[in-house]
Amino acid sequence: MGLITFITDSGAKLFSTGNNEDAEQNKEKQSKSPENKKAAKRLKETIADLKLEVDDFEISIEGDTARVEGKTADHKTREKVVLVIGNHKGIAVVDDRLQVSGNSQPESNFYNVISGDSLSKIAKEYYGDAMKYNLIFEANKPMLKDPNKIYPGQVLRIPSED
Image 1 (cartoon, rainbow, N blue to C red):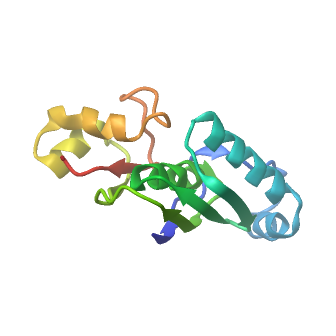
Image 2 (cartoon, rainbow, N blue to C red):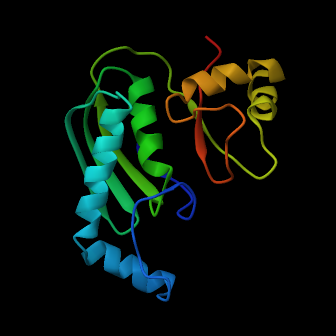
């Protein structure tokens, strides 16, 4: 998949940083701090908690870039792992080095949520039918728990209609 970009200031918080430091100092500190190892460990735990299976799973974080390596059984799992990592505050780029060992289903599109979006609006854009919002909701489970709770800056999987 390669490099996937995300909005750094949206998503769940991974890094604890001081309130009085500017963004450049924070970025510099994160790349040199052992905090990135803690954040990577929390991400691995989150992936495991979501029951997304990755063999030989490794995550490393430097600055605002997370590199992920390992093997998944299918594209769906790979895409969800990348989205879980990228939809965390402080991560702007995911260097996806995951390998897919089986299942050759087509890759999904990714969509960056903007203010005013809803799953039905996105479904209308991609499928021509707002009532197909559940395809997007199901494709993003377990990261999404409610089809009405998406936020600007979040990146979603948009699977093919098949």
